[in-house]
Amino acid sequence: MNASIPNKSLLSSLICILMIGLMSCNKEDDNEVTPLDKKIVFDLYSNNPGYSSGADTTIYSTNVLMLDKKDYANITSAKLVLSNLSTQSYMDGSDINAKIIVDLVDLTHNQPIPGSAIQTDNIPASAVVSSVDFLNNIPSTPFNLGIRIINPDPTKVSWRLYAASLVLQR
Image (cartoon, rainbow, N blue to C red; front, side, top):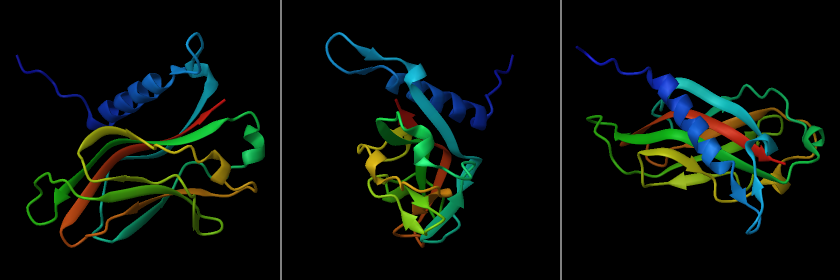
């Protein structure tokens, strides 16, 4: 009997949900826990998977067409979560450790959102969460949100990304 392998997109979504679930129990102090209902999760990127184009910078618009910070006045933090980011040799497709930078971009004003960058050279990784809370760097006026992937060495390295999410915590 052959075992079926689950769809990679479904598997990536489940991994992302699991990571968000793990993030959902942040200890505020020794006696208090923040539940999942205190989070708002925006699915920014899901492309079954997305691959590099050989370019040094690739920018994608997201399904968040217009983000207005005033609509989320009770938010206390913002984090970027990436699911299944990996790098391969551009020549033979073998997995390699290489630097890739992923961050969020204000497409309306063509500006990166400071503090949202995830830089990693220790991949493949099933899930990566930004280490900095960049809520204060989100523009106060409405803007179109994008995700930018920077490949410092596109002639030797290609990347693959299954999903990216913006997690806002109340």
